[in-house]
Image (cartoon, rainbow, N blue to C red; front, top):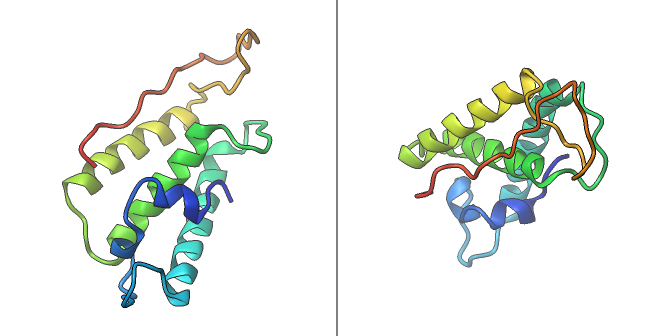
Length: 129
C-alpha cells in the first residue's frame, strides 16, 4: 500500500470519512477496516499507473499524497459527502494520474539525469480543502 491511515489523518478529519460514529474522537474498529480497505483499493488503482516506474520504499511523497487523496475522495463518495473540496481534489487526482500515464513525472534523485522522461516538479493541489 502506498499510504497508511496516519497519512490520511494529516489531510482530513477521519471521522467524517466513514458512517461509523463513535462517542469519542477515536475510530471504531469498523471504521478502521473501512479506511484500510479504501487504502488498498486506491493503491491497487495506482498500481495501474505506476507499473512502468521503478519505485522503492519509502515511496516518493507525491505518491503517498496521491494515494491518500484518492482514498479520501473514495471515502467521501461512500458517505455521500461530495462537495467543492471533493471536486478540487478530484481534478488534482485526475491531473496527476494523467501525467503518470503519460510518464511525464520522473522520480529521479536530484542531479540524476533521465532524458527519456520529463522531470516535473509537482505543485500542491489547490488550497481550501
